[in-house]
Length: 260
Ligand code: HEC
Ligand code: HEC
Ligand code: HEC
Ligand code: HEC
Ligand code: HEC
Image (cartoon, rainbow, N blue to C red; front, side, top):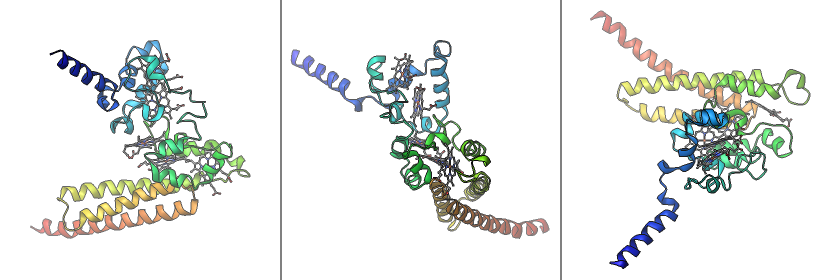
């Protein structure tokens, strides 16, 4: 009998100490940080948490500790915060120079492209240059709208800086615009074929073009203007062709329907 109790105790203790036992829903960082009282007690915490709430990261179940460190299994503030560093600490996972590694743990291809860019080189040589969150913001609530990005570029790429930093905002605006339009066509094409139950080889065709679109977005991170121009032109013209094909098929059908 006493043996059974001892075994039970051991079981409980083992589970308490085992990080695997802490399911994502028991993440203590979030459990504490979501407290609405912070609206009054610590407005900054409240604002950051709200920003986090409808981010793609929250939606895909990331933990605060993925980017901030700390012990997400503890509800004790001291214990939980052990390892949560000050953002200015050069060892912080989110210190601007370390972000390509931290974010790149999950966004490997973007980080790899980014590391080929002049931005990364500048970052390493302590020149003022953008890192991941300069363009995507902290908690990623509004990560990549074209106008926000172009505004972000303009903070450094100003006309009067033309000597030091190449003037690129107008060109980039055009390339990002192409990607935006391509995204629109891609969405429309997907919805169209889905509504028809994916006839013929349409599923493969759409999957392939989506992959190409994603590659074009990934390649943006090299910030090589010629490459951006090339890949955004290519993806947009391919999607326009598909769109045209669908349009022609529809028009072929419609006059026949009208005659009935
Ligand atoms: C029991 C409540 C509680 C838990 C658990 C908790 N925090 Fe906090 N956190 C706070 C409070 C309160 C603050 C405000 C500053 C302070 O009092 O230390 C804060 C501040 C922070 C800050 C900002 C630090 C700054 O300098 O402003 C970060 C980042 C943070 N927490 C991350 C985390 C992470 C990551 C975890 C889990 C590993 C976590 N917290 C767990 C209550 C908590
Ligand atoms: C994808 C990475 C990522 C995740 C996951 C993440 N954060 Fe952050 N967080 C950041 C970045 C980057 C900053 C700094 C940006 C800035 O200065 O505004 C930041 C800043 C903060 C700050 C302000 C810290 C300071 O010293 O100014 C708080 C508080 C915070 N985060 C809390 C949280 C909490 C709570 C969670 C989980 C619910 C969380 N974060 C999840 C990336 C992340
Ligand atoms: C632990 C893994 C992980 C880390 C670390 C991480 N992310 Fe993410 N990120 C994801 C997942 C999962 C998604 C949602 C699925 C997707 O779109 O890839 C996502 C989505 C995004 C998106 C939106 C993509 C979209 O399709 O809408 C951006 C932008 C982004 N992350 C940037 C960052 C930045 C910047 C950092 C570093 C501060 C970071 N991520 C750190 C896993 C991570
Ligand atoms: C100088 C600005 C800039 C920097 C720095 C930057 N990005 Fe991006 N990022 C962009 C642009 C522009 C896009 C494409 C937006 C679009 O048209 O969809 C993008 C797209 C993304 C996406 C995909 C979003 C989607 O729509 O699918 C992810 C994820 C991402 N970036 C992660 C990162 C990571 C990780 C880093 C750091 C290694 C980083 N970015 C650095 C500008 C930047
Ligand atoms: C924080 C400052 C900063 C921001 C923000 C910034 N850049 Fe840069 N950019 C630089 C620096 C520094 C260089 C490197 C200049 C050099 O080495 O010649 C650079 C170089 C470039 C180059 C390389 C041009 C060439 O000669 O190959 C391109 C393209 C570029 N940036 C595009 C962008 C875009 C697009 C954005 C916004 C999405 C952006 N930059 C945001 C600082 C910035």
